[in-house]
Image 1: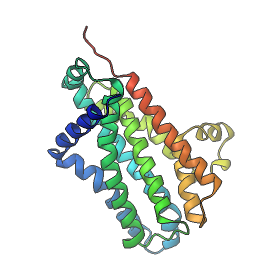
Image 2 (image 1 turned 180 degrees about the vertical axis):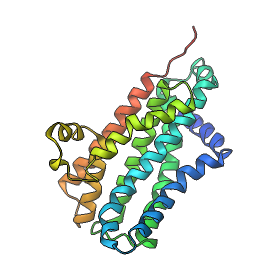
Image 3 (image 1 turned 45 degrees about the horizontal axis):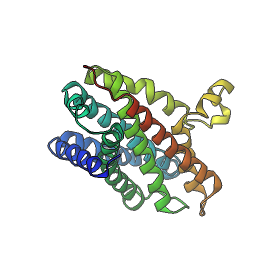
Image 4 (image 1 turned 180 degrees about the horizontal axis):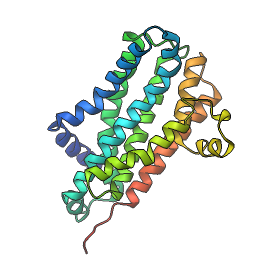
Length: 245
């Protein structure tokens, strides 16, 4: 891995995104708009907003980063940009980490905006540190980025990339424990939920919601989400190959 090449790749991706205001708006503003809408959906029941707002603070960034990253990376693949880059003396690790660094930078901004809005404008009441809430939101956004990089290898068009959302995101959304406790699910579904990273993202947010200190469960949940993100990034690197000899 070459640091200068990784940074050059990240800078190139950020320059391209600068000319795509719709993607930037989707990444930075949509999670905030969704949280704002959720707050006033539960305007008469602020405790309900407190109980699920923290979880959705992590889920919304994951979903938006998945969508934008998968579509943006697919454009690079279908336009031949990745093909040309792979013909250069640029390692796969440099390329995939460059993409992750670029989208990860936007994920940091997204997480700061969404967390700040939820805590200081919408009155989300959490017992734990806001920085822990921000950490989990950021890890979720990075996981969405990694998943988007990975699934872009299996789509032939932007429409197909969007079609991966029901297959990759929706099952995790239903089984993560947001709608009902995971231990109340049918045993087979509970076992499946135990291997899905979004389940631990929701659990981590729940720990911040209920505890003032950093608990062992929070550390476990954050590490699992981070490890899943790095694992998926590794799988994404494995899909980077030239399609022509």
